[in-house]
Image (cartoon, rainbow, N blue to C red; front, side, top):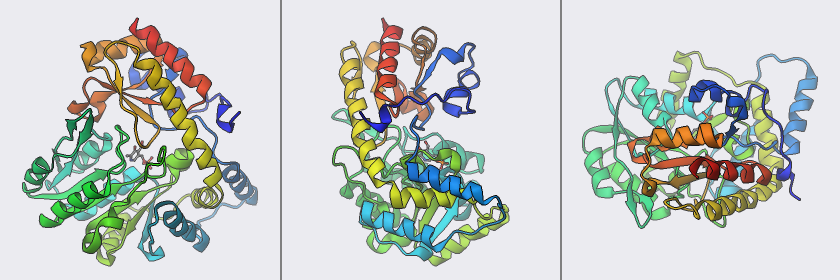
Length: 389
Ligand SMILES: Cc1ncc(COP(=O)(O)O)c(C=O)c1O
């Protein structure tokens, strides 16, 4: 019996995942649908996090606060022990989310109409954030090789050469769960340096490494080019704290930190919610055992779903090295995405993410979130099968 076997009822809790499906999928009767879409987990965080938040709530005075030294130190220690990455406290800047960190970095390091490069299929805000800030998005798709998506560095270099000013990397990769190796990361740095491009590395999924996979922070292998890297990290995916809202950027270059701070000032973004660093500190200092129990639980859920779904003709699932997301390939079924989604939602009563949400390269794929109890995963598989029979 694992703590993650406990199925927590989340419906009617203003949860985006459980209570916003009617709006997102535009359908009635969403209350019968099992959500396996948006990337949050159905698990309670480590007990130490809830306890620290409760203690803070009991203080009863919630004026402006700043981030404590011990909260800062918990980030330094976490990066050191988890990723073997030694960072300086002074290099850390805070945001209330990684998406807002991406927006600030785009605003700070590019100008209106500048080109921002991304590698699709990829997390949708990589398209939307630069675009809605008046930048031009250039997509250099990942390419398929031996059943997986990889970088095509020839095309990547050609894209960079079109006067691109910033590149947003998803490390590890959402939706594919790919954990980029050191050689790939070094080649990204080499090429971005050649064209003087700032690299924004979104590493929010970095702690979710499965079965011995190892996350490599881009900046850790960037050598002399470290100052062109903006690393975005957070404890929120790792410990299921998205609603608490905290993220941080690690920026070694002093000048770039000042530019980011100026963007923060310009939009009036200031201190964090006082609960957020408390949750982060508790998670980073007391949450390791919880995480060590979580990762094999996720792996087990994945193995089960893969074994079941691959019995269906035309379905292929590659085992991710990281994240709690499965990228399901149904291209051989030759079904339109719209029909597939309709079957899943209306017959199966299960909500997955349609692949084109991550770019056109995602057509014929679905993203399934398996961060829920095994009981719920089994229910999801039954619903998925029912939709396709
Ligand atoms: C790659 C990636 N970046 C950022 C986020 C969201 O970050 P935040 O909630 O901190 O804005 C997600 C959430 O799924 C994600 O997958």
